[in-house]
Length: 336
Figure 1 (cartoon, rainbow, N blue to C red):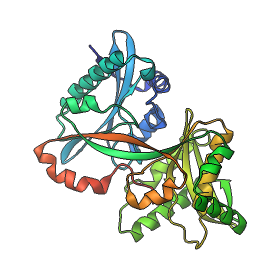
Figure 2 (figure 1 turned 90 degrees about the vertical axis):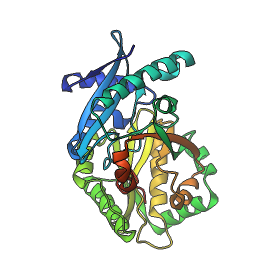
Figure 3 (figure 1 turned 180 degrees about the vertical axis):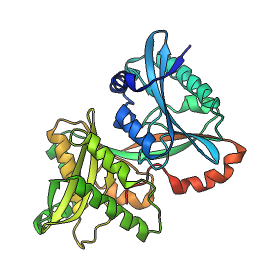
Figure 4 (figure 1 turned 60 degrees about the vertical axis):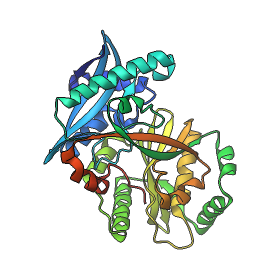
């Protein structure tokens, strides 16, 4: 039997230790990130720890939100988090039978906890490659999501595997005089405003508040958050925001279509982020969002591998209308 505990601030250190012990544990699972999400999404965080006897076996952060309907998310809309859900301690070291037994028991315990909240709608976005079957067996339906990732075998090796046109674009940007620098909080604001502009051009709505990003910067810069800003003649012309956690660097947000013509400052910004990851001993560069056709050509020229993850959804008849409008309120979708 897996028992659950809802923990408080006094056990934040225990929580983050479990995040570090789980292969699914991401920067989005960390205590400080979750509490900032709770604050800016007007939702209630339930930080659940699964216990087998006196031994913690995993964590599962869920957010409860009531807006007409009762809803449970992991992660909630407007948080710019691509995945969250369960993180199992030492998951990869377990034998398959043990892994499945613990995971199934944990998921079912969490599902029983969620049922007591009487939600009309539940959405859990699993981490890449996480087994979705326990959710299927509990009556959830699945939606597939896709990302790209690069194995950072070294700067030279990664470079020679790029598409020829990409290498030419990067060289052209350098020859033009575009420079990539480590950006500041003001540069993060420039990237956010660029995304707002691009969204308006596409008649789309940004649901991620600026104050949320600014607070994340204050808490996670410089160890876990980097801004790679592109400048030309002293002016900002592009850039991306990257997250660093464990052995991975993640292209998180940014790369709005630039106003410059015939050169690509964002290709150069990505290359600098990849180089930074190589030089700092990181193993993986992740690009979120490979499931949108119009974005694929921008992302696949880096010759990445494709990864798959799943969103598990359970809904009542009353939430049919919500599900129709939910695509407009996706928790991610910040890449332009």
